[in-house]
Image (cartoon, rainbow, N blue to C red):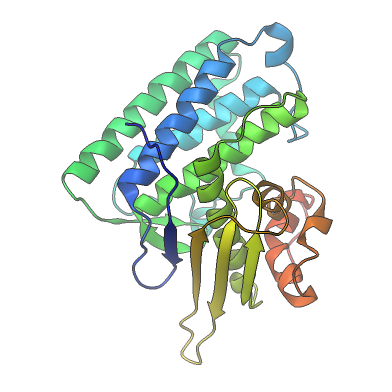
Length: 285
């Protein structure tokens, strides 16, 4: 499955349906993962043991993590892999998952990532062919399983950058994957903000590859019905680079790239970065 032109628009909502063109999303993910696997096959022992932007993880640890997360795509209705109320903690749970593959060789990790990827994408293709719809639980609530695919693509895009930025390797930008990752990075950042009572209502113009117009709104109801909505329109735009903003939202890059936002919105949307970077024995404000 090959995607040859950029997506035009996307709508994500925690309450109500989303419009994300799952066939196109899967095609973008297939190409992103194919390129990553190709590059990883050229790595030697020094690169496999090199550190990444995640201080406790080597490149091989990162690949083992991608195996664990990619497997979630094949999960069934009601899956709670990423459910905070079921014990998922983004700071600690992924490291616990790694215990199952401790001692694995780099070659075995790479073969496993290729196999898990093929299996997960085959399941997703079959579901799309049958127009199958069901919810799984993500950190901010129940969502259609196709949003889980977007979540895993964002995770894969971010960790790919964690690997190659730490190795100081300049790679061509995957424009379409960056488009999706930027949209989802803003969406999940707003969802985390909403969970702690912040409102992130903001219109952003982001430049560079994957940039465009991103409009966020967080609704708070007197009946305790809260929701987050993001509309992304991908087009040539001025503003800070989309990839750098997405990095900063996840605590991977300098936060000053977010200075284009008003202080209130910036505070709200950096809650996610705080979660990722805070010590494990502390509780988020």
